Image (cartoon, rainbow, N blue to C red; front, side, top):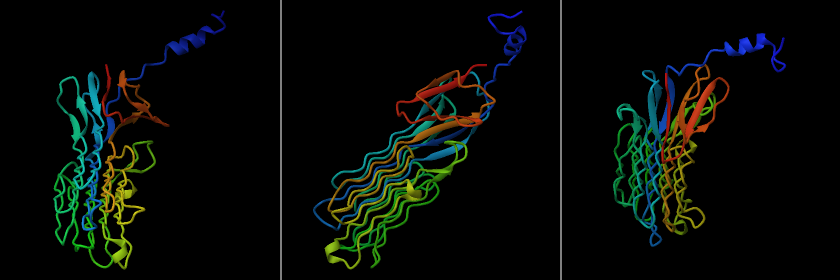
Length: 315
């Protein structure tokens, strides 16, 4: 005998399938917003601007009391690149917080904004903003982790600023010798959490600018490169390439500093938050504002909305 064309044996097998449990732990990557690059000026080639620092980054696992807790997620916004001879804006923090008790979880601060000439970088996150350079002065913004991007030496016509700090290395100083160039941004953090296998970089520092006047120099001006290919490149003193470049989208990387004759520092990239765990466990009972990027044997959820979202399971 059958029911609607389905054999009773098949009905019994389907009914016996066990419900999946909540996960016992989840892996995470939290990356805060990167700092904006410093701004130069159109009035003189003696002003360089530092690269923005990378946002702080944390990777790990929550392994206790996962069920019956709702977790709140915020992916911090990147800082704005500076305009017209000023420091870039620092990035905003990213976090995973226990929404049930408002205690616990993990968070990291945003990167410091790159400074204009003669000023120290701004501390923050895992990468402080770098200092600008004028007539040989050099200093960088201190922060937790790798929080220094150092400005390099130079002269009134050979000015090079330092790169912003990255997640795994400090920013490099600008070079004011005959082979002068802006300092490179510090290296970022590699992670495979986005798809479980491909190594991608996050939280690279922005490059410092080189504001020398190309008409009076024997070598071409060169802005510093962004850390790990995700930080924004620094500008150079040409009409074609003076602006700082934005950090790569949703990597928490710093923006590049700008060079005369332009004054637009690159924007710091917004941060990102991932959680990942085995498909042996069920999807979250609460899940808001997340993108499902699951693949293979992994459930993977990604937050880029700076207004925040939630996830959680009940027992």
